[in-house]
Amino acid sequence: MATAMLSAYATLSILKLNIMSNENKSIHEFDFNLICEYFSSMERQGPGSPDATVNALRFIDNLTNESRIADIGCGTGGQTMVLAQHTSGHITAIDLFPTFVDLLNTNAAKRKIQSRIKGIVGSMDNLPFRNEELDLIWCEGAIYNIGFERGLYEWHKFLKTGGYIAVSEASWFTAERPDEINTFWQDAYPEIDTIPNKVAQLQKAGYVPVANFILPESCWTDHYYVPQVEAQEVFLKKYRGNRTAEELIANQRHEALLYSKYGKYYGYVFYIGKKI
Ligand SMILES: C[S@@+](CC[C@H](N)C(=O)[O-])C[C@H]1O[C@@H](n2cnc3c(N)ncnc32)[C@H](O)[C@@H]1O
Image (cartoon, rainbow, N blue to C red; front, side, top):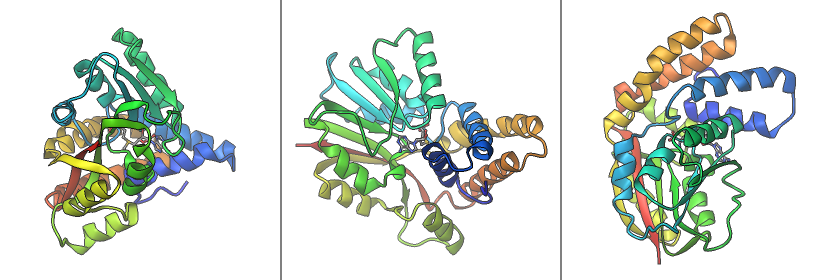
C-alpha cells in the first residue's frame, strides 16, 4: 500500500477504498487493520477539541429532549461524547469503519449513555435518515470525504425547517500562500477554499450562515498532533520493519511539520448554518 507522503486525508481515503473493495484482500486487510489500529488509539481522528465542539453548539438554539441529531463521520466518537454531554436528544453517530463505531458504542456504554447514542456503520453518501427527520447535523473534520458542497446539498433534505448544520472544514485564512503548502493541499483536498468562499457555498446550498469561527491552534497541536507523538513511538516499536506502519507515521509527521510551518495560512473552520 503506497501511503508515502500522503496526508491523513489520503490515508483515511485508502482505508475507505479498502473497505469498499475486495481486491487483494489478503494483503490489504492487514494494512487496513494496521491503519485502523493507529487511528483507534487516538481520542480523535482529526483536529478539534471539546471546547470547540461546545463553542459551536452555542449557536444551536432549537434542541430539546426529543431532538434527533446525526454525527456524521464520527470516528471513535471524541466529539459525540461532548455532544451527548451538552444536549439531551438522541444522537445517531455514523462512520464507515466498524472498528471506530465499535469503540464509540463501547465508550457510550461505559458512560451509561447508550440509550441516547447509537453508533452505526454507514456511509455519508447514503445516509439512513428520512426527509426532515433531523434537528441537527454535526460533522467534525469529515465532510471532505464527500466534499463540502456535495455534503451540504445532499444532507439538506434530512433537516427539519429550523434545523441546523455544523461542520468543521479545512479552509485557507489568506488569499495567497506559499507554494509548498498550496501544493500539499491541492493534492490532498482541492476543495479547500477561503472562509468567504465557504460561507457563500453554505448559503448557496440553502442555509442561513449563522456563524463561523476558526478552531484554535491547540485543536491541531494539543488535541491532535501532540497525543500522536507517544502513540507513534509505541506503534513503530510494535511494527518495526513494516513498510505500511513506517509510511503511515512518516505521513503523519510530515503533516504535523507542515502545520508547524504554515499553520497561519490554513486550519479548520466551524461553519454553522440554519435551514429556513
Ligand atoms: C478526520 S476523521 C474525523 C473523525 C472525528 N469526527 C473527529 O473529528 O475526531 C474522518 C472520519 O470520516 C470517516 N469517513 C470516511 N469516509 C466516510 C464515509 N463515506 N462515510 C462515513 N464516514 C466516513 C472516517 O472513518 C473518519 O472516522
